[in-house]
Length: 170
Image (tube, rainbow, N blue to C red):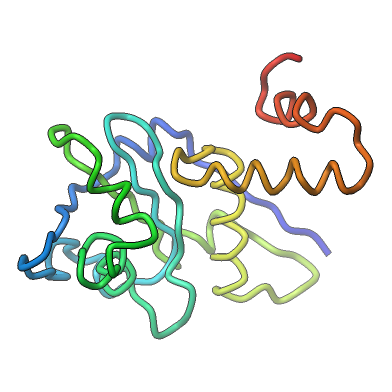
């Protein structure tokens, strides 16, 4: 069995984004802000000022980008939790942008041989890989969790290991 992935350069992902406006209390969210992507499912990347802030996925066949991003960008739908407060703290302009990897694109970027991965499996894999590749500002907990796991396995210097993993020097 084999899984191959292709990771688009961060610069391309940032260039291909579309603006998404926060819906503070009293402002209605509308999926039409996302154009043709509103009804699609897959992986999305939120970025601002050239920096990747968050990588997420729709998560199920009944979840679309429109529904998922409503939970991220609308204050009432998020109950003021998760990443909404972080998004609300960003200075606009520049606009908050979202880049989309709809399921058809995900299936081209994540290819399996010797097994049936399925669309949802490919979405899960791409989301995980993009988090590790792009190191989103709002998801530093993934790095902390990896360091904690390495400590649990007995590595004496997991922080240095993670620095090397990120492409730095110790």
